[in-house]
Amino acid sequence: MYTSFLNREDVARGLSNNNPGNLIYTGIEWEGKIPYSQNQDKDGNTVVKKFEQFKELRYGLRAMMHDVFNGYKGGENTIAKLITSYAPPTENKTDNYINYMVGKLGFAANYVIPEMTQPMLVLIVKAIILFENGATTANLISDQDYKDALAILGVDVPKGSNVKKNAFLLLLLAASITLLILKINKNDHGNRK
Image (cartoon, rainbow, N blue to C red; front, side):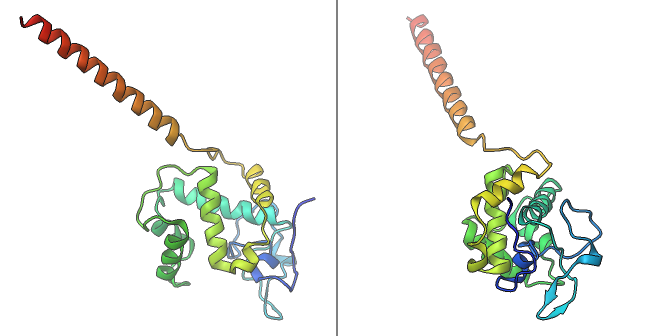
C-alpha cells in the first residue's frame, strides 16, 4: 500500500494534494494525476484548483522529480538556475528560495552540479519540500516514499556517482605516470655515463 494524504486537512496544502512540490496545475498528463474536474485543491475552505493533485504521494514526488531532472537535463545545472525555473520571480521570492536551498544543500548557488544522480535528485527534492511545506510536513514523507517515486520515475537517472571510481582511476593513472617518469629518468641517467 502506498502513502496518500489526499484532501487531509491536518497537513500542509502540498501534502494534502499529494503534491509536496506544489506544482501548479497544468495540462501535463502526469502519471497518477487527478483530473481537473475532480481536483479539490483548497485555499482555506475554498476549492481553487490552483495546484496539481495526485492519487498517491509517490505520483506527486515523481512529477516533482521529473520536473527537476528535466530542468537539469535542459541546462538548469545549478541551484540558481533550477530554482529560478521551478519558482520564477513573477510568482515567488526566488532569491530567498535560492538562499534557503544553498543553506540546506551546502554548496554555492552557481556551483555546477556535475551529475544528477538519484541521491542528488532526492537531496534537492527534499530541500524543495522543506521550503515549500516546512519541516513538520517534510518529516511525514518517508525514505520509502522517495524510493517508490524513483521506481516509477520513467527516466534513467544514475543510481550513484562515479566520482569515487573516477578518483581512484585518476590516482592509479597518476601513479603509473610517475613510475614511468621515474623509469625513464633512471634509464636516461644510466645512458649518460
